Length: 89
Image 1 (cartoon, helix red, strand yellow):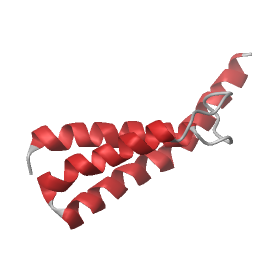
Image 2 (image 1 turned 30 degrees about the vertical axis):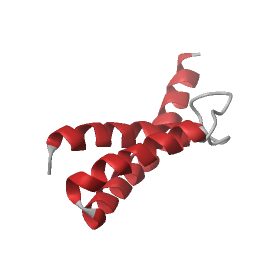
Image 3 (image 1 turned 180 degrees about the vertical axis):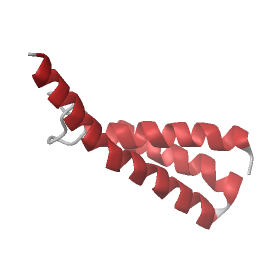
Image 4 (image 1 turned 135 degrees about the horizontal axis):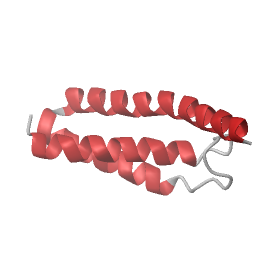
């Protein structure tokens, strides 16, 4: 695996998953949701960078793992941030 392809691919994967989370109307980070297209484009670019570096099966597995990790942590971080904001009031 070439780290020059994997590092930007992981960064685009994290940004893509975060933007997809922010596009949800139920998220707790922003009052106005973003559009889905920037997040989908970053996620697709992440997969496109991983594919030649790792092969099909490993690239899809790593890509899905990164997207699931961020998608799992984002709601908890948003709730934690909202709770801290309420406690500061």
